[in-house]
Image (cartoon, rainbow, N blue to C red):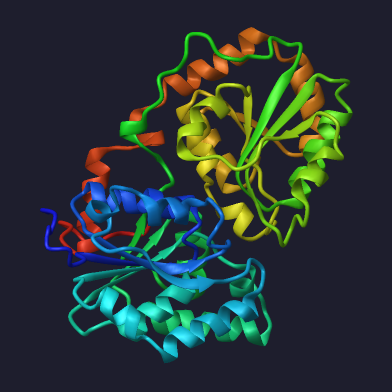
Length: 399
């Protein structure tokens, strides 16, 4: 597909959070495959904060990547569903700017349910509609009246979509197929690392060598149980376990994250990071924490997080739970460190781990086929073909 140099969007992308770094990655994928992307959405942080949305707004290459500036729908608040519903309703009642953004695009991609509703509001009869679902909110899984209504709304919108994109096979298998009756036209797009950013495993990198093992917890930080467990691990290790934390903390879960981290000896928070920092972050840790309890038993059991692929791309073994989708992925590929109870098991496991054992873990990662961790050019072309409806066969379920 050739890039349209006229400035008209060849794909409109509506997102629930412009500050999500994953939005930038998806825009990069689409732009790299020739789309001129019209991007619009809400943001979770103030305009003066230096988040991913600011990078999108201010990027010198945004005209080639986006074709338009970013259409900012305003700020919504994390964990404030009522406030977000009001913001969506206002856009539903005043859709003019969205129509301008989406009107010329043959395809509209809507990231998460509230954006799917907005996309449906402005969609023209000939436009293709793609629903990108990267998380299943706990409200969608409840048994009460609100949950029933939300699932009903989603089913109504699903009937009007041409394709659903999920980031984990469990979302397709255990939610869309089982609970929403959507078994066809579901495409699995894992959160893999773009192949052009393939890391070169350093010949010299930080390894604890049995004296101190450093665990990295990176990305969107929203799990209080994780912070508590990492704090207990470090406190009980007599200095043999250290934890480096980096990323954006949810203010709804952590009102004063730096102070909360500082309360745990052995934990250090280095603040938010950008894409260019990833290599240096993973270069100073021995393991990456790929455990999430934020929606334990629900979304947390189904997801395959970005840090899984980023850690592997940088040669760092992930720590994950048995019995969840991340653990099954690692077990299937023979890499990583799996536990049932991190606090009970990790102190002894890491105390007994020799440098040679850690080296073998890294060797197993290095032996993984490229396509398991990296999004190859072939896969990108297949994703674009499915989004545009030009795939040889209809997209199949990610099960």
